[in-house]
Amino acid sequence: MAKIGFETARPAQVRRLGRVFYTAGLRMQKALARWVAEEGRPDQLLLLEHNPVFTLGRNAVETDIHVSPSFCEGEGVEIARTDRGGEVTYHGPGQIVAYPICNLRGGREDLGRLVRGLEEAMIRTAAHFGVAADRLKGAPGIWVDTASYKPGGGLEKLGAIGLHLSRWITTHGLAFNVAPDLNHFRWITPCGFTDKGVCSLASLLGEGAPSLEEVQTVLERRLLGILALEAAPARDPSRSVNALTWRRGSAGPEILMMLRVPEHGAWWQSVTGMMEPGETPEATAHREVLEETGLTGTLKPLPLRHSFWVDPAIVRFPDDEPRFNTETCFHMEVARDAQVRLAPEEHLEYRWCGPDEAHALMKWEGSKGALRLLQRELSGS
Image (tube, rainbow, N blue to C red):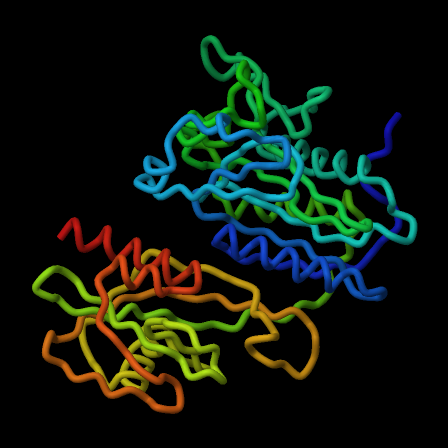
């Protein structure tokens, strides 16, 4: 019988990161893969949700996506190529993504055991909530016979697996469907299957389905046990805010964009800043807008909080432990005739931009995501 998971314990830092933009997640994985490759460092287990995105694995073809790029853009779904195995799949809110960034050298050089371990963790998690899932030969992931849940049901995928292995360092991992928007799977050929569907705990259990946080807790415990990972201390993410500052112009909203000084990166951005101890995100947003621009206005939250890896080439740290940050997003409307007073130690110049120009100037996924949400909010007002 093929062995499942591992027996010899290894330390692993476990990080629950909430929402992570997919391309930011790719950078995160590559950085952690380099880090765990050094002997004596703990493995990494990341648990998170992605923004809506179709990802194309090494075996995917463009025709696996049945809708146009412009349609995807209008629906807020990103398209991204990736180095994992498999075909095309969907990630989005309501789906738990787990990335075990593991060094398999030193007695764990068996990718099959890792794959079976990931499947087993998902099978046991599903069973914990009363759903019987199983493997399907030749089709990595876990499957449910939904005939007992709905008329005309058949085999449907509850959890997917796609891995990348380089010099016995693993990246990518699994995706477990708790309550994602299953309609998005209808726009693709998921994992190359045309005769099988996709399900979730919510589609199977209805109102009795558990929350994503409940499932995440169970799945984390199963992954640690089956992969023989011992949770090691990990530094909490720092916290920051993004406060899109804008005014009403004659042709529509205008976004304030500022050019950072070279020693702070030399990229264009709206207002961002780190939270101070004991400070609320709202208080930080008001303070940062005032300090960076001299402006005050009406602050409103955006429905976006996301996490990312902090590149040590941009921010220097006293040690090499990976750093992460969680950013809470707001927008602030200011008076059209308000005068901007830049903090010269932070920014060189500023300009008021239409949304398209602002989007083109923005460097980071979180700022672009916040801008899309602001446009959506303003178009409905």
